[in-house]
Image (cartoon, rainbow, N blue to C red; front, side, top):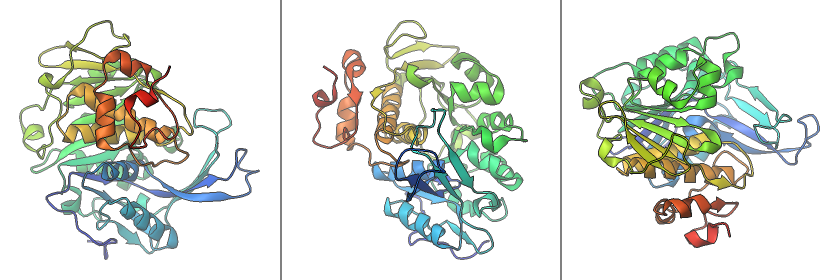
Amino acid sequence: MPGPAAGTASADATTEVVCLGESMVTFLPSQPGRLADVPSFGRGIGGAESNVACALAAAGHRTAWVGRVGADGFGDHLVETIGGYGVDTSAVRRDPERPTGIYFRTATDRGAGAHEVAYYRAGSAASAMSPANVPYEEVFAGRVLHLSGITAALSADCLELLRELTAPRPGRPLVSFDVNHRPHLWRGGDSSVLLELARRADLVFVGEDEAEEAWGIVGAEAIRAALPEPAVVVVKRGSAGATVFASGLRPGPRSSNAGGAETAPASHSSEGGGAENAPASRSREGAGAEVVTSVPALRVDVVAAVGAGDAFAAGFLSATLRGLPVRDRVRHGHLMAAAALTVPGDLTVPPARDHADRLVALDEAAWGRLRLGPGWTAADRAPEEVRTP
């Protein structure tokens, strides 16, 4: 077992979600422009799994982050900042031989051609995570274990760790897996392994674009066909919204080891109709007990397109833990993503639960009229105040 843990409190049976992965210190530019021209940077944090842990904690859930950072000031900053969101960091290990990863990015949105990101994470402390040095009793302490494909790309040891964590075993919690395909991390590698890992999970988040890029699979139905094992597959379709394929928990080890977190039985889906690309939310019966639910995305005045996917996962997981219907889980995901999109950094304070619940309860027409911009998460904003004219 590794050396002393950072943090003050231990994860226990009351932990709802444990997130494992690399977090890095991110440097945000003081002004737009090329990295070569930006004169100064502000410091923040970034990391898919810690983003989910922080967003869930800010939304009132008990979360823990498991990771590995250097025995350096950047590691101190990560542990203290993530802990400041209310996340348990007691299972974070410090590596005296390897540094904490950092990266710099431009102010331009990720999708723009001028966007630049400079990573300094090779040989990082997180890349040394392995089955031999991760505290399994802490990793399996929650109702849900959230992982992402980013970790699998960091090193051979990290990939082996994810294979171990997603393997069927007695007492395994419900495994949530965000594919999070990052092409630059897979240069010279085989990203098809992400399909293998996703098939071993209970709940999978995957974008249509990344499924096509990583696996050559096109379309939501084809993605579900390639992922028959997970009880729930959430296909993110960009501006078209998201489609959820839900069959409930299957019998056997996957069901008995779910740790009490309900996935999406058919009775929890909203009812509707229309074609595959209809703008309204809809559900239809698929093969067997499968139910397919599509929910349109929101119109958002984007400040920075970073952290939205992690926020969506957090919103969906939060609503799942609350046992909400599938349509509402997706809507909470969209709202949490909108909160991230309307601030400069990866992390934001989500809307108050009652505020989000009011928006989620809107009828289809009112949901379709929503347009969210900076400041929309303020607790005193009523639904009518964020609608378009």
